[in-house]
Image (cartoon, rainbow, N blue to C red; front, side):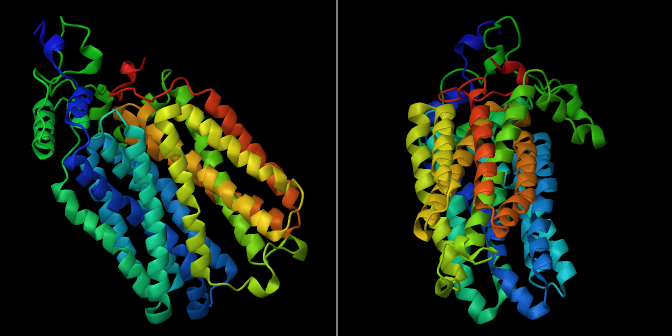
Length: 485
């Protein structure tokens, strides 16, 4: 046992030797279906509101509450499915997300009244909030080299989901109505549920749990599909490799996670929280929360400013960015254009993350967002205002996607999914309260004040990036907190 560590290989070394091959390509398709299925469920809210107003005579407040219900479900579901993925495995988390999202999404199509629809859409939000588990699963199969680019390509699939839902709504709504749209939107989640039976558990998670033989079998399967060979030797742990006098692989009885992870009930549900708030991770956790809150607050706030100014909802006609005769343009075209605008914002970090690193990339994108907002401190004509708002939305979206990549790399495997979920919950709180600022100030003729407010939030996020402790570019993923350098 003394020289096993020197002749063994780690999970990172195994994945690097296997490269990004056929297996990873299939994994990207699998995780991508789940990712854009969640995007579809969220995007459809843009289209069913007017239909409900006509069919059920819902008020504007009730229509807004439907969106609030989805956000509420997401706040609860984000951490819940992260906990499931960390405690019981990525596959279990994926199946749970797919079951809840599909079942409640389909049942939404048969809602007999407004109240039942709100409850079901809350549950859809609860399920869709677990979409980050797909991302964690995919991340743990990617070799370190170019890991950032492939994770951002997966983020690109969220935009594909938005575009697909917009196109589907454009085709279905005028002909068959909102119920058919809800039913068809649930199909990708059903596809994920069926495909999850063939998806393996990640070797990193299995090894962390002490299930070494299962981890090796998964790596051998990946090697077979990629037509590559694993390194020689035995699978060993990174953090024990420098201690040749100790057992390199934890046993089933002594997994890398602390004994707390074996407890049931409430204590097990909260099992990852002590690690997230430990002295090693507390600073990172708080900085990530600040970033998530700021990015989501600014993203949805800027989008609501665009909507308020382009729909004539402002009490000040001078603040409208569209002429009166153009304010009834097709909803589908407007949403389609807004989604397409995010594509350049995704391509930019794809080019930068592996060259400049995650931290510098986030800093550049944050500052570009702020620079595009500053000219709006004074009123501009409609086309200039539109271009500046859409551009700032594009860059803050790119900042968010880069942040998600950094967060998944900086958190160890033992808390990766639950840490992501908890941060997403904090961010969704920002998404819930931003309408009070964005819509309220714009409708009240206070565009300058709204820009100052959002600019300040974006500036805070830019400062937070400077305090992230280290760059994750080119680093292997950590398994446990004690493995942190």
